[in-house]
Length: 304
Image (tube, rainbow, N blue to C red; front, top):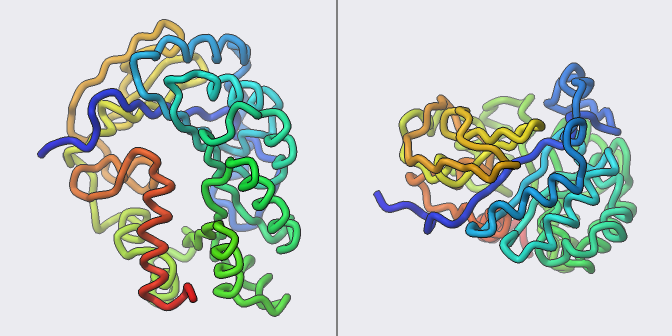
């Protein structure tokens, strides 16, 4: 089976911190994980991380930051802006809880048009009017990937208590060029009625990949082995395929070995789009996700 990529595309995942400045009741990250010591900057400064990105000029690089809340520590702003200044850094994604939108805009000017913020609406923290203001600000600076809304019992109860209609909100954002994702709450499991509800907004393929079981990943041919890597806080690089160390960010060493996946499941959008048994794009994966799920919403009648 032919791969999806040309060998130059590399996705580096960083975890600046597992700490978070919010405590959402439905969060799947445990309290112990949020309190885990250590950040990306304990051993190396932002300047050192930025300089080390220069080791990979022969690649088309995408960086991804996850946590915790990446922007809950100030150093992340400097690194995001610094990474974005490189020509070989083509794209970036940061998952963000919307608490630092104004700082992102002011402190990461080089990230415009490269960075895609996956911005989450946590109803326990922000009103709908506040979210509208924040996502429109991100979009105006070409920094928005999509708005993410977890369909948890708590968030759905917030909509009901305020007499909000989910589909009307989705259409409001759509009319302003903003895709509002409706993400399944992992705490709901594979409940059939809940699945039926989510499929109004998300393709069944995405549901099945995220919830596991339908598409086991073990030994499945996948481009992630040669293109998707985890960068640890000490600079060591691990492959998504089997979590083995294959390089070092600060030396520039990176071994790309085409091996089948050694994991049992592949439940993250950023990883399962690399599998060769689906037609999802691993390049600009958010844009590809938005496109296919916009089509799903037209079929289900959600979009006017």
